[in-house]
Length: 193
Image 1 (spheres, rainbow, N blue to C red):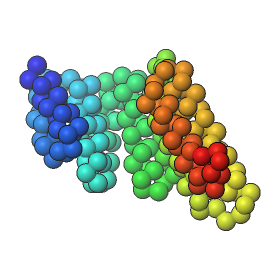
Image 2 (image 1 turned 135 degrees about the vertical axis):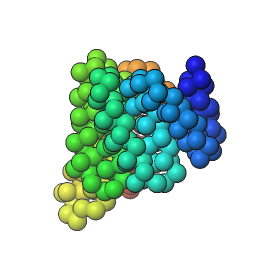
Image 3 (image 1 turned 60 degrees about the vertical axis):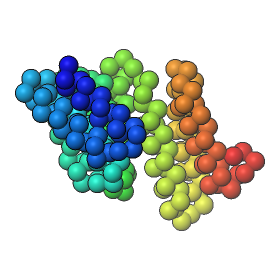
Image 4 (image 1 turned 45 degrees about the horizontal axis):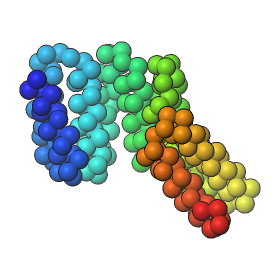
């Protein structure tokens, strides 16, 4: 119960924006989880620590802890946790500009979600696919390539919107509409935006 409280305190501080204090609580909770040997709790806490380092802008430490969390999640056998950890690593690759590795991890995450019997949270990775193609469109030189990448991005955003609507996730629906509007704005299609 102490571990659960420490994790909850970490979450509270993270939500309040005090990431440094959040990490302190996560590390205290992690110490207890390691003593009890609960692989799933250890994996989740390593992921929380990695995510918090990511929010602090320390991508190197974020990657280190997310990879440790991924390895521990594999040991736990939790399919949804493995899918989330895989997607989180994809996010780091995205931030590093390694879009091919990011796509590979996002695709694997979505496959794992489907294998686990859910695709409820895969909309985040689908939105990230869209962002990769939007970035590629911005860097493309030829009009055909630009249009191809923007169309591919819009296709992924529509998939994410459809998932949000299917699961009645209002925040995700709003997020998808905003991203679709921003994509149209990027294409100078202000009426559609």
